[in-house]
Length: 442
Image 1: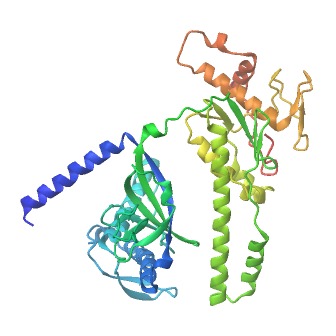
Image 2 (image 1 turned 90 degrees about the vertical axis):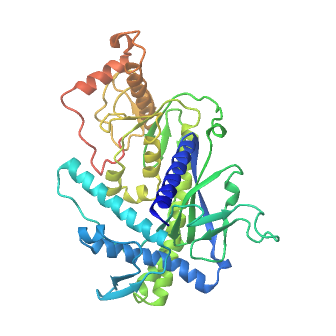
Image 3 (image 1 turned 90 degrees about the horizontal axis):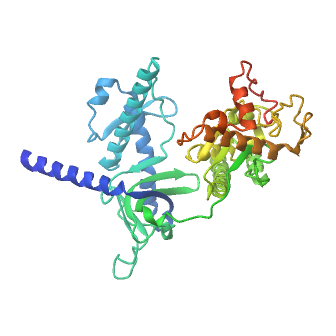
């Protein structure tokens, strides 16, 4: 290919990419998880697929060990590299994976190094360094039609043998996948990732659909406040409670005891370790599923959700570490904070001690007092429900004082509770951070 033909080809690729990005800007991206059925492959093909992940790890560690000048001059056409075994000895390696996978590893490392340099410039501190990886569990498939392509329906051969299959570069035989019914008929397929987990290999596929299909009207619900806890993980201002904890099974404890009795590095030890990894994966899937369902129940149809910036990490370090570990509080908090309709109140706001009726701060309340009784006005309420209602009042006050319509002065907009909240914000002595032993006061 001469120089003019190469430039024309690159120009056509650039214009097509711009057209695709412009079209995707008006569509909604969705990621689905599809499991690969490796039983349709023979032993050689399965070994080759798993070898891709090992070769990516070798290449990644090889590139991290290079100096900056050699790293910049590295060519993705290189096939001979060196790596170290578990004893630290240098071992020559020959890479057999497609060049696109090598380019993906190289570009990923360049992006990570650029991020480290940007963070160093922003903070003014010394630049960090990338660590060697003991495993490489995510393979980027960034070019549909080259690194991967999918046959959704009966448009394979005359017998329909290739329907609902994926073709991966370097693997001749098509691989059957489970979960294709999640993808609409008019979806536009984009990039994907191969993810290796203890239970198998999964394809994280990204596709685009028109936005109007998701703009469905939902029933309007009133504003709500959320109180996070240990015994009852989520309590709402409406009195509803959610339990998003999943306990470890006795089977997992038995496998851990069995692993402790076995010889480290033996075949039985490795088999038990793989079973333990699968059990942990099942627990993580259950917790994530619970968090997603509770999140949907909370946010659907609501225009304002108020929560407090709870110190989940501090709870985990204290007396309630096992309870926090068995719950999905961190996942739910992260999902709620990413929602634009969720208002987060300051961590030190006394949502449990503050009376929502008279504004008195009940300093003598303890963790064992499950019912809040105001010593001034006699207001009585279950403590977690009262804390959620107090957070909702604080959120409504913040929203009223930051509304775009400047038709009234802040003093006129401020309710009695709002006056107490503003006085608390401007007070010189703010409540101290809760200790790990008092992990759940609110």
